[in-house]
Image 1 (spheres, rainbow, N blue to C red):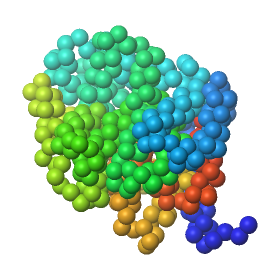
Image 2 (cartoon, one colour; image 1 turned 135 degrees about the vertical axis):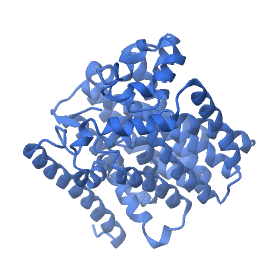
Image 3 (cartoon, rainbow, N blue to C red; image 1 turned 60 degrees about the horizontal axis):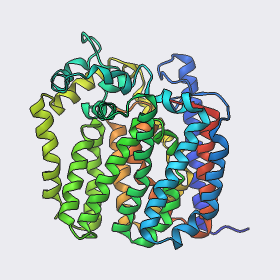
Length: 438
């Protein structure tokens, strides 16, 4: 079969991405064997080599086959609201099946209950006011009672989420992952809503199967960053609905967007970069009308946390100091500044890479979809250049990487099943050959 020039270029782009990842892996292994400064067992990913199958293997294969075979047709024919719910449900099935390839204990409950994680710190929060007042003073390693790595690395909203679950009877190692997967899977629905508001229903339907069958699911299901990404995605979705006036109460949608944006910056410091995705939405919609309402929605979080004793900027500057007390002190910027991007190849998948190539073409340069994707890409690049993301970006950058996935909608429909198979192949290969962590 003869391929047209555009389709050949898609394959070249995918091949170049595979080569980039391979080079990062080879050079990373050489550096790690030489001086150990990467602090990674299987660079550029935070993972270790362990070929295996598990109880989730048959389910993951079945979900992949069903979405590849029927996803594009269902996305075209199903009415809109059922499609949004179906995308959420199918994404959840894909995430769960991938997580269970590693088994229940190692692949699900163990991820949130290690010595570094939030669930081990839940019982320490007995007085909420005292916790917030002393939060920043416990970030540094030399503090009398320092927080574990990931609690120290985030604002208190991340820890308080799991404290809240515990207080309503959903504590322990099972409910945390259930919450993360359920909320994290909704990111596919949120991005679908955003794409429809900005780019139209046809483009959203073309993107839907790629939002579901994303290799990013490997990390959404087993890290709190999947939850962070979903909160950010719904904040952007509500902003898009408000900016395009696609709902009856656009001001209320903008207010809700602000509430979620305000919460995201107290979940992860890096999510402040979602402002670039928000700016892309406003640019694509050519409207600034939602901005005052977004600010109004976010302001109560700032007031509440500050009044309670946690000042965001103090927490961030203290975190920077803590960051360079750990592995970041020896991890080489010169490697990670490009290897971080190589790691994203297995997060967004080859279909997204091919879609990004098309997004860079002259024919679609000014479309709303390209502007939206560019917002996510700019956020990722700024995070990369900051030097505050040395390794583990396969999970840390999920809130930005997910906004690259809609680029696959630019691929020819006749090729969608092949590209979906490539997406599934990446995720299945990673989860069967490596044990991922965070």
